[in-house]
Length: 210
Image (cartoon, rainbow, N blue to C red; front, side, top):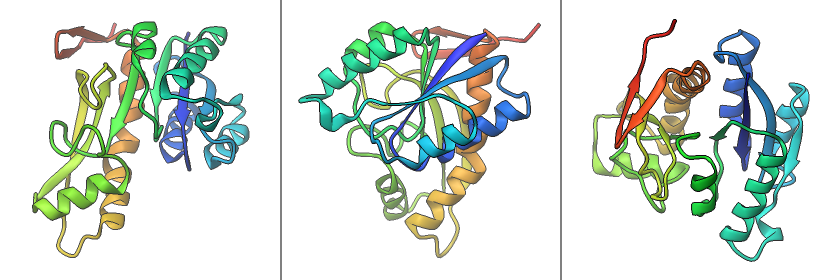
């Protein structure tokens, strides 16, 4: 059984997608063992409580640097015997201690088709604002392993979403979540829990299941 911790900062819509997949038996044998929030008032903690998942707070404001917060997070994850870390709307840059503790065992979902509209400063609505301003016709979402470079780790899954006439950043954000993020994040987690992902350099291979 793969023990999963989901790191959150806000409403927890991607967490809810994982909870739904768990309830349908679609997490590949993974267990949602913990939800850890960077904010004590994040609604995601309420979602965790309602789903029977232990919730914890490691608040950014309690630490003088991202590094100090990252070190505290790693300590908590190790205490909980976590095997896979999932970043689901976690709004803080983690320092290298996290990557060293969980090499190729941290998944992040990003609301664009990496390498477009990604990296430092590209988060939340900013991503969709940039996509609309650039005039691209297709956007989407990416699940990738986390390394030291923001949004720079090996890509696991991607799903495209059309941009439509009249889209606002808010409308596009919702469509990308509904059509892409909420599907490929649980899929990637299930593949990891089934032991079907292998990484060589930048290339992630999805192996056939038994």
